[in-house]
Image 1 (tube, protein in one colour):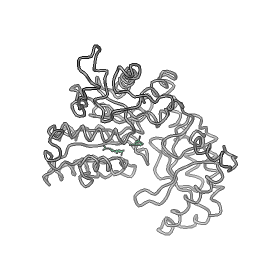
Image 2: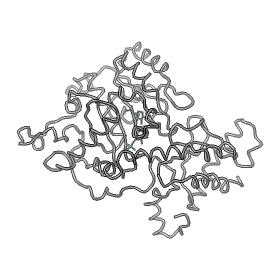
Image 3: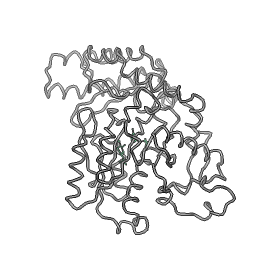
Length: 424
Ligand SMILES: *Cc1c(COP(=O)(O)O)cnc(C)c1O
Ligand SMILES: *[C@@H]1O[C@H](CO)[C@@H](O)[C@H](O)[C@H]1NC(C)=O
């Protein structure tokens, strides 16, 4: 792909397969994946229509729940992590105000939920979609590494209560989308216990670290969460979509919250164990058997090889080559050593190297990454995302996932960026 010609056909192929190239560092997916998705266009409302898939879903969820450290739990695979987060908000609200299922918004006090400044935009969407209101999402400040500040969380909970609102949930993140930061779950869980709030951990991106003995401490305390979202389609490299939502609960909360008891699907007098008819827990009717993707991969590789992939991606992101090179060769690191595999940095072209750290430098730097990105795409040599963040100028945000990535690729990235940006 590195030297593709820009004919139409090749361009289309590039669009389809560019994410499989080892030098695709553009998003939270990449690498050669199991392309099984198209074969799996089946529904899974009930055991009788998808006996194998419903059993697989249960088996995979059980395994993931074990990794989280819960004794028991429930869950579903959903069409996207964003949807898993919406499930969490809805479920937390149902626990807080069970009457709302029947009486709707008229039974609701003003509810407030808390999430970190770094949170993925899906929280705002969930608040709007579910009638919570985006103004009732209280944004908790994060520190410079992108981690939620527990003291600030508590202050906001007290503030909301003083306003007469009812706090009901806190959303912590294990692996933020931009910086790959992990919120301090134990400290946040202490606060949730103190105020009786639902703790949701969005581990869509960072959940995979649970597989690794070396890195699972990044999610220390996750067993205290009430619910967890974890997307195997990100770091675990299944095909899109493969998104688990899990609940630590033994009261069938998911079922009570979402069930509509459609009598043409979920007859209670079937001859088999109807707890395998998982469809009524979902807000969907047709639902793809996404758990199969991770089931198959897990069977094929086993936990230890999945863990090796995670370890390898982290080792590449934190490897001395890229790390030192970024520091030494006219680049600026956004953060100290990355916590996960999000490597964020600015490239400083020769013409700006004489400038001190001043607004003029940042204004000019802001324009550098978009030009280099354009050049790398037109040349076809690399794919790395760029973005601004808060008041910080455009920087490169390189995501490492694929086990095909080597230290030579890491060297290549910096050399290529330098050669593409020399004249800027
Ligand atoms: C990717 C991501 C999501 C959204 O997942 P989708 O499957 O793309 O909807 C939510 N939270 C975090 C932290 C993510 O990285
Ligand atoms: C929680 O925060 C995460 C990550 O910061 C974000 O992806 C998600 O949308 C938020 N979700 C909810 C339900 O709070």
